[in-house]
Image 1: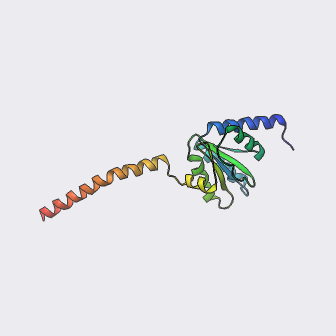
Image 2: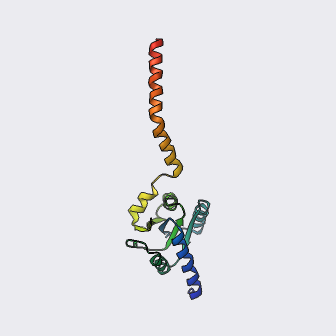
Length: 163
């Protein structure tokens, strides 16, 4: 059954708002996913504050054209959805987790990052960036390393003098 013009306009408005309000978008091919898999994906993404919308590719293209994104739109083959969120890295990272979980049923086709189109390899690179907490932990470890080395050296000197 075809979608009415009013419904298309409503979907287009929602897509335009999602594109405008989000820091990044990921184009997702979900061919072969079962309803249970998609439900699990949606629940996890919603819990992480990430939206997931399936729409016609023509409506997606129209919404993306009005956003004024630089570059060239990646090729969108198959059934396509968009994952989007306020966090710049979270949509790509969470889709990557599910891409590994549902092998060959879910794949990233590309995306939008900092108002610029990204191809599949670029968005995969963004998806592998650690989360904020992990980066802070790595930073603390870098700061702590010289101090820890100094303490180990002092301990070795103390042991040598007592021996």
